[in-house]
Length: 316
Image (cartoon, rainbow, N blue to C red; front, side, top):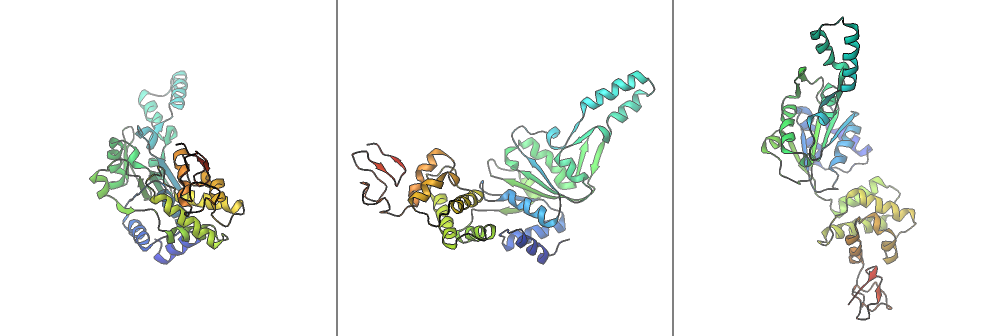
């Protein structure tokens, strides 16, 4: 069992910015063998929690990516039908095995293909099981998970009940695309991750990019915070996109977020065409310059002139 100091030290080594709530939740979940349900908007770093904990705890990471229509054969196990057919043909040619012997052998470990859920409880060493975006899976699959989360065991009709060899740390993530059942929530410790504050985003930038210019890091953190607060932005920038943007600016030798810098690198922080047009909101009034008839407010005049503040032509 990892201690609080060891967990903090490990997260520091992994350059992960954490708070006391995360530390307490992880320690209790490990001690009690409880799953952790992490909810929050896309891009706040829910999946990263599982990745970094696997690294810190020195456990293998087993990931199940959920999607609509996910079923047991993709999540739990599957039989190797081709190998089974081959074994049947060989047995028929030999005519030595009885039907019962053949049936038993066909449904043995030799023909079992482990999928993430089964692999996690049959692992010889404790694993971190990431069930990513559980809200994308059907309610039927969510209900199927309850046996695993409650008893740390899985029932396979052909074999029977498979009990866990080790207890994985189970982390479920949800973007809240649909409500999750109360039964699932009851079985889990709960964390909600919001988009980071400017201060926390700045801390993430400086941890992940220790050589970044201090003023640039602050400008990027403030700019991303402004973009996320803009209701016109359809796809809010994720923390990963903040890091990508800062890396792109660094690669170009840019230390100041002026109009040209924004135009050159906006595709690293905003990821659809409608959102790109909103990059002008990061510029202070008057930044269009004296030659632009928008008056420094991002609005073009009646002559439909080009406004560099917006990065596109306005039409009357």
